[in-house]
Image (tube, rainbow, N blue to C red; front, side, top):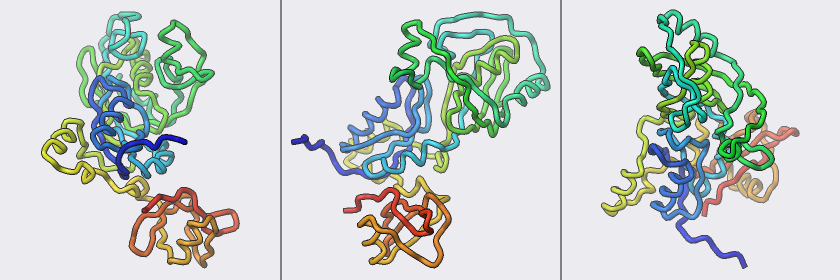
Length: 303
């Protein structure tokens, strides 16, 4: 008989401010321990040296995780010019030091223009991508390099926040799958000096409002004061605000929960439809089937 996992039934989304030096999984496990939650997962890893928005999905919220993986994200970063490293960030060993040739703001904007819009990147070896089941970073640590395919990404915004003689601080809004380390390296190469990432902070993950993030220290303090940290969780449907919604009748709800389709005169033409009961409880995600009926995609456990 399978052993029942200990913990509380915690459901909702936490916008964690991941601290410097922790892996995404370590930050997740710390938060999960503080909530004493049975189940939790994160959406989109951050390197240990990166800080910022790490959405954590507790309990039934894990069912919306696949719909968040395609989210656009925003970052601020600082690129150290004149040095390339093995990892593309300041943790790596220096590969090459080069002279930084002076450049004007106009020169810089001309370079940045090449990286705005649709571009291609070669993922770094120090990444979580897998080759034959092995993460690339583990192979890289063994001195093994695997040929990686270019991938298409989109840079929606690329703005200079600060420029010094040897650093560039940038704001970036990009599509899923963008490697900011690679972007910094490529910009450095285009400037003729090379570069590595010395700071990275994720500032936003769509569709959330990420102005008020929760830190591990805030959670610890709240619990120490005898408060329930679950009040900090966003509702599960906060992950899907732009998608159409439907309120189901008792009969329709019963059909959906029994795996049957629902017919209506008009249904949203969407593969993601938020479903609610008559008490406005979010009960899951539906979609329009090929025969123009409503069918369940992911249902929440609501009792």
